[in-house]
Length: 77
Length: 213
Image 1 (cartoon, chains in turn brown, green):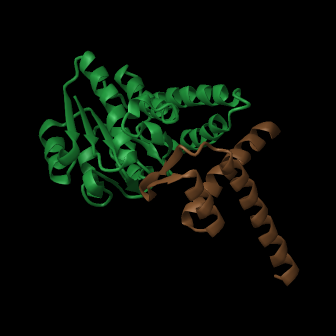
Image 2 (cartoon, each protein chain N blue to C red):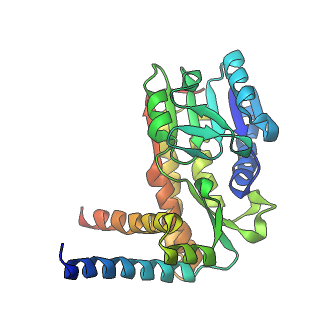
């Protein structure tokens, strides 16, 4: 894969992260999410995990992307 | 007869434990004997012993989990694939636990006359920090707990395993549409997205028609 292709993919991932962080940032500060045995996370902790691109961040991304994919599929059926 | 495990040692298990009390009351109203394994009773030795001695029709496992197991108090493994999963033979099991339908559920589902209802990925749930000591009054958690509890409510009404998750999913979807109508409420929109995740991950392995009551 060329450098330009790599750059394109990274930019896309970064855009997804920005979208997800924008969605999380509007939540109330008193909300928290329990995600399995990973624990409970406040809005700001979730944003930190997404920014850190770690396992918790990836799970949040997966959940948000699943939502978008599901409704796109339903819209095209 | 219904056996319920209710570990309680972190926010997630505290909520599952509290909301299971609603189900216990409902089962008792229907005349079922309920074995309630709460807190320190949600241990492997206790669960194994009760499953062997009482042979309940319905097993509700609340707790954390992974692909191949469901845990109890303090994360102690209660039921694990390739170990003591045969204890679930001939029963309907509902595991409110992350991922356990993948391997544990698939194994249990291979036993004859057995159904395993659970989640193929993480079970996610919102909570309000202002309600952590009052889980049953938490408006953010309510849609997630209603979805989960409806599986058991339907089983208690005599519906089969597959029909019960179908009915629970309908309850979840109805709530999602209602939340989406709250255009100005960002919290409601988020609850809808994560509730959708739980609806998608809820599955039944094994005998789809198996009844618990």
